[in-house]
Length: 187
Image (cartoon, rainbow, N blue to C red):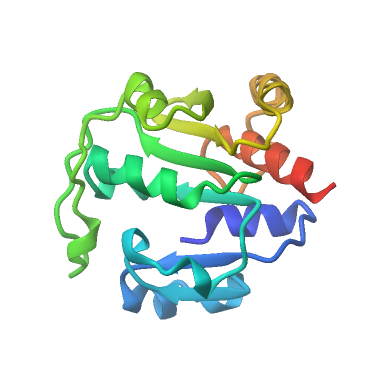
Protein backbone atom coordinates (compact mmCIF):
# COMPACT_ATOMS: atom_id res chain seq x y z
CA UNK A 1 0.00 0.00 0.00
CA UNK A 2 1.36 3.36 -1.00
CA UNK A 3 4.44 1.82 -2.64
CA UNK A 4 4.47 4.04 -5.70
CA UNK A 5 3.51 7.19 -3.79
CA UNK A 6 6.54 6.57 -1.56
CA UNK A 7 8.62 5.93 -4.68
CA UNK A 8 7.58 9.21 -6.30
CA UNK A 9 8.18 11.19 -3.10
CA UNK A 10 11.64 9.56 -2.71
CA UNK A 11 12.45 10.50 -6.31
CA UNK A 12 11.70 14.14 -5.50
CA UNK A 13 8.43 14.24 -7.41
CA UNK A 14 6.29 16.44 -5.20
CA UNK A 15 2.89 16.29 -6.81
CA UNK A 16 -0.57 16.32 -5.25
CA UNK A 17 -1.63 12.69 -4.76
CA UNK A 18 -5.06 11.28 -4.05
CA UNK A 19 -5.57 7.66 -2.99
CA UNK A 20 -8.81 5.77 -3.38
CA UNK A 21 -9.04 2.78 -1.02
CA UNK A 22 -12.13 0.61 -0.81
CA UNK A 23 -11.31 -1.10 2.51
CA UNK A 24 -11.49 1.43 5.35
CA UNK A 25 -9.26 -0.49 7.81
CA UNK A 26 -6.36 -0.35 5.30
CA UNK A 27 -6.33 3.45 5.46
CA UNK A 28 -5.29 3.37 9.10
CA UNK A 29 -3.26 0.13 8.96
CA UNK A 30 -1.06 1.36 6.09
CA UNK A 31 -1.10 5.01 7.27
CA UNK A 32 -2.32 6.18 3.88
CA UNK A 33 -3.20 9.62 5.22
CA UNK A 34 0.50 10.14 5.98
CA UNK A 35 1.50 9.19 2.42
CA UNK A 36 -1.16 10.90 0.29
CA UNK A 37 -2.51 14.45 0.22
CA UNK A 38 -6.08 13.14 0.06
CA UNK A 39 -7.56 9.71 0.83
CA UNK A 40 -11.03 8.72 -0.33
CA UNK A 41 -12.62 5.57 1.12
CA UNK A 42 -14.74 4.23 -1.73
CA UNK A 43 -15.03 1.65 -4.47
CA UNK A 44 -13.15 3.28 -7.37
CA UNK A 45 -15.84 2.10 -9.79
CA UNK A 46 -18.34 4.42 -8.11
CA UNK A 47 -16.21 7.40 -7.08
CA UNK A 48 -17.63 10.80 -7.85
CA UNK A 49 -14.86 12.53 -9.81
CA UNK A 50 -15.85 15.87 -8.28
CA UNK A 51 -14.27 14.69 -4.99
CA UNK A 52 -10.76 15.29 -6.29
CA UNK A 53 -8.74 17.44 -8.66
CA UNK A 54 -8.73 16.60 -12.35
CA UNK A 55 -5.69 14.31 -12.55
CA UNK A 56 -2.83 14.42 -15.03
CA UNK A 57 -1.44 11.04 -13.98
CA UNK A 58 -3.55 8.14 -12.72
CA UNK A 59 -2.08 4.97 -11.31
CA UNK A 60 -4.21 1.87 -10.74
CA UNK A 61 -1.80 -0.38 -8.87
CA UNK A 62 -3.18 -3.88 -8.39
CA UNK A 63 -6.75 -2.66 -8.86
CA UNK A 64 -8.11 -3.97 -12.16
CA UNK A 65 -7.84 -7.67 -11.31
CA UNK A 66 -10.41 -7.05 -8.55
CA UNK A 67 -13.16 -6.32 -11.09
CA UNK A 68 -14.45 -7.81 -14.32
CA UNK A 69 -12.76 -7.01 -17.62
CA UNK A 70 -15.80 -4.96 -18.71
CA UNK A 71 -15.78 -3.00 -15.43
CA UNK A 72 -12.06 -2.28 -15.93
CA UNK A 73 -12.77 -0.99 -19.46
CA UNK A 74 -15.47 1.32 -18.13
CA UNK A 75 -13.24 2.52 -15.28
CA UNK A 76 -10.37 3.42 -17.62
CA UNK A 77 -12.75 5.19 -19.99
CA UNK A 78 -14.32 7.17 -17.13
CA UNK A 79 -11.06 8.11 -15.40
CA UNK A 80 -8.97 8.97 -18.44
CA UNK A 81 -9.58 12.62 -19.21
CA UNK A 82 -8.27 14.26 -22.37
CA UNK A 83 -4.94 15.34 -20.88
CA UNK A 84 -4.21 12.44 -18.52
CA UNK A 85 -2.04 9.36 -18.64
CA UNK A 86 -3.24 6.27 -16.81
CA UNK A 87 -0.90 3.47 -15.72
CA UNK A 88 -2.40 0.17 -14.58
CA UNK A 89 -0.41 -2.68 -13.06
CA UNK A 90 -1.77 -6.22 -12.87
CA UNK A 91 -0.33 -9.68 -12.24
CA UNK A 92 0.39 -11.44 -15.55
CA UNK A 93 -0.19 -15.01 -14.51
CA UNK A 94 -3.03 -17.13 -13.15
CA UNK A 95 -3.46 -15.37 -9.83
CA UNK A 96 -6.37 -16.85 -7.95
CA UNK A 97 -7.04 -14.95 -4.75
CA UNK A 98 -10.01 -14.93 -2.42
CA UNK A 99 -10.96 -12.80 0.53
CA UNK A 100 -7.89 -12.06 2.66
CA UNK A 101 -7.34 -10.45 6.07
CA UNK A 102 -11.10 -10.13 6.50
CA UNK A 103 -11.24 -7.96 3.38
CA UNK A 104 -13.76 -9.23 0.80
CA UNK A 105 -12.36 -6.74 -1.75
CA UNK A 106 -9.06 -8.68 -1.94
CA UNK A 107 -10.76 -11.30 -4.14
CA UNK A 108 -9.52 -11.42 -7.72
CA UNK A 109 -12.38 -11.38 -10.21
CA UNK A 110 -10.11 -11.43 -13.29
CA UNK A 111 -7.48 -14.09 -12.54
CA UNK A 112 -5.81 -14.52 -15.92
CA UNK A 113 -4.50 -11.20 -17.18
CA UNK A 114 -2.23 -11.32 -20.22
CA UNK A 115 -0.40 -8.63 -22.18
CA UNK A 116 -3.14 -8.88 -24.81
CA UNK A 117 -5.92 -8.39 -22.24
CA UNK A 118 -4.11 -5.42 -20.73
CA UNK A 119 -3.63 -3.90 -24.19
CA UNK A 120 -7.27 -4.52 -25.16
CA UNK A 121 -8.77 -2.80 -22.12
CA UNK A 122 -8.89 0.54 -23.89
CA UNK A 123 -8.15 1.88 -27.38
CA UNK A 124 -5.84 4.49 -25.81
CA UNK A 125 -3.21 1.89 -24.79
CA UNK A 126 0.19 3.04 -26.07
CA UNK A 127 2.52 0.68 -24.23
CA UNK A 128 2.63 -2.42 -22.02
CA UNK A 129 5.69 -2.93 -19.83
CA UNK A 130 6.34 -6.46 -18.56
CA UNK A 131 8.72 -7.49 -15.82
CA UNK A 132 8.63 -10.91 -14.19
CA UNK A 133 4.96 -11.44 -13.37
CA UNK A 134 3.77 -7.83 -13.47
CA UNK A 135 2.38 -5.92 -16.43
CA UNK A 136 1.89 -2.15 -16.57
CA UNK A 137 -0.43 -0.80 -19.24
CA UNK A 138 0.01 2.83 -20.25
CA UNK A 139 -3.08 4.62 -21.57
CA UNK A 140 -3.01 8.18 -22.97
CA UNK A 141 -5.80 10.75 -23.10
CA UNK A 142 -6.80 12.31 -26.43
CA UNK A 143 -4.65 15.43 -25.99
CA UNK A 144 -1.53 13.56 -24.88
CA UNK A 145 1.25 12.98 -27.38
CA UNK A 146 1.35 9.21 -27.88
CA UNK A 147 4.80 9.42 -29.46
CA UNK A 148 6.12 11.30 -26.40
CA UNK A 149 4.65 8.68 -24.06
CA UNK A 150 6.09 5.83 -26.18
CA UNK A 151 9.50 7.53 -26.10
CA UNK A 152 9.34 7.92 -22.31
CA UNK A 153 8.29 4.27 -21.97
CA UNK A 154 11.09 3.10 -24.26
CA UNK A 155 13.69 5.09 -22.30
CA UNK A 156 12.31 3.78 -18.99
CA UNK A 157 12.43 0.19 -20.29
CA UNK A 158 16.04 0.67 -21.35
CA UNK A 159 16.94 2.13 -17.94
CA UNK A 160 15.14 -0.69 -16.15
CA UNK A 161 17.08 -3.28 -18.12
CA UNK A 162 20.35 -1.61 -17.08
CA UNK A 163 19.48 -0.95 -13.46
CA UNK A 164 16.66 -2.98 -11.93
CA UNK A 165 17.61 -1.96 -8.39
CA UNK A 166 17.41 1.81 -8.88
CA UNK A 167 14.62 2.20 -6.33
CA UNK A 168 14.61 -0.22 -3.40
CA UNK A 169 11.01 0.61 -2.43
CA UNK A 170 9.44 -1.37 -5.27
CA UNK A 171 10.12 -4.99 -5.99
CA UNK A 172 10.00 -4.87 -9.79
CA UNK A 173 11.27 -2.78 -12.67
CA UNK A 174 8.03 -0.99 -13.69
CA UNK A 175 8.94 1.64 -11.10
CA UNK A 176 11.29 3.00 -13.76
CA UNK A 177 8.32 3.49 -16.06
CA UNK A 178 6.18 5.13 -13.40
CA UNK A 179 8.86 7.60 -12.30
CA UNK A 180 9.72 8.44 -15.91
CA UNK A 181 6.10 9.28 -16.73
CA UNK A 182 5.69 11.20 -13.46
CA UNK A 183 8.88 13.20 -14.16
CA UNK A 184 7.52 14.08 -17.61
CA UNK A 185 4.32 15.38 -16.06
CA UNK A 186 6.14 17.29 -13.33
CA UNK A 187 8.10 19.28 -15.94
